[in-house]
Length: 404
Length: 122
Image (tube, rainbow over all chains, first blue to last red; front, side, top):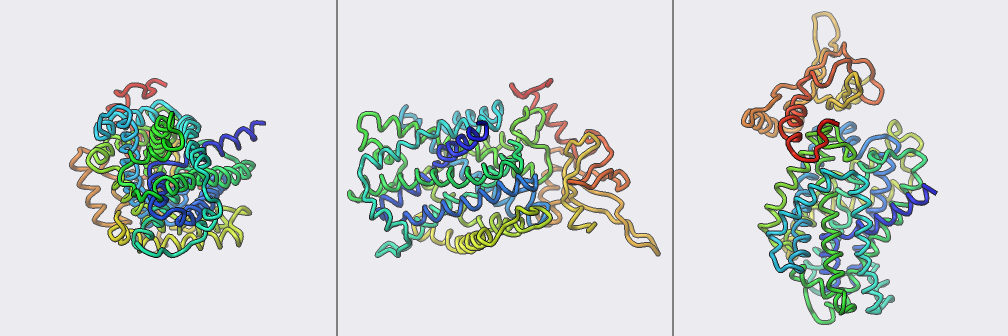
């Protein structure tokens, strides 16, 4: 019974915790500009994420090491400094963007600018980490994040063309606006396959003390939780394809996204949208700040755990505190949508340094024993690695050409 | 045991199994007529950054000097103190008495304990 509950919670938090500023903005922009045509990027991103999350969870369970710890031990500090610096910089940008967008949700209700809201939101996120524990951060925000299912109901209410949606799941070249189209694809992939997700997930497996008998739970949570979560992102694209695309509206600000839910549900859609935007981005901010602290602490061998009081792990707690202190300054100084687009492109560029080591680690006989990768897992990881290397070279140029 | 593969970057635990840090550097002792032997393990300080980039190591050292660091030198633990090499290294020292924990203890006392809900006294 306990296992069933764990699986259920894992799937539910996977769904509720999936949507955040990056996936919301990139899916909505893609739907608004290209209809269903970029669905394939979301499907590809979801499949890649499922493979990476399952692999990092399995690595943590079997080796008793998080991804960051295993990279440092297997490749040494010289190499580890690359994913460390890239991970901290990218996560900081994404954290600032999540704070700004949570601020936008509060701005929609109060009329007070997100620039001011970024600071109390950061204080709230810091307090959640300072006073809470891992379960509250992950499961609490994931469960509340289920309000993002409003995009599923909005899409169903608008009666999408399922045939055209299925056709969009297959990659196709654009007829015009090529740079914007490919930038959209790259941003979607960056938003879907954020390295912070698998650094966070593997740390969670250690925090929750998963054992080898929990490997099936890891597989199910990764597959169904991330799969259904990505399904919500696809529904954002669908609503944007039905609400914005026919009218030629291109998304220029987060506030405009309220129409996606307000049109199918005129009475309470706006309120649900504000809740979904605020809760999901706030939850993501807490998880990202925690990931920055995980990365730094695990790399240096500093004692870490969100399940201990801050006084037990002073340096670990002060790393996420510093992140919450500095990120609102960036959030207040920039346009949320531009910051999100830039951080998604940078995330996509940073993928190889975190993804490539997984291929070696998952095949390490000493580390993984009988649970090391088999042929299908290796083929999937090689394909993702090739894609990550391509993204490294194209994402930043496309951000300039395609309007990042 | 291979020094670089099995020792370098391993997790260091103290005699009470508390995490001290990682093996950031290894000091070898060379005596005439004898093979080199591991004399010390280094943890903390700018040792790790030196392995990644000399520029970053210099930046690290400058920051430590600028901000009145508690710990400018790495902790040096004698190889003779290594009690176990299973799942990282366990050394027979008290972590709190090594320079590796100087920052942790200073920050706990002077910063974290002054913030509400830090769990002081637990």
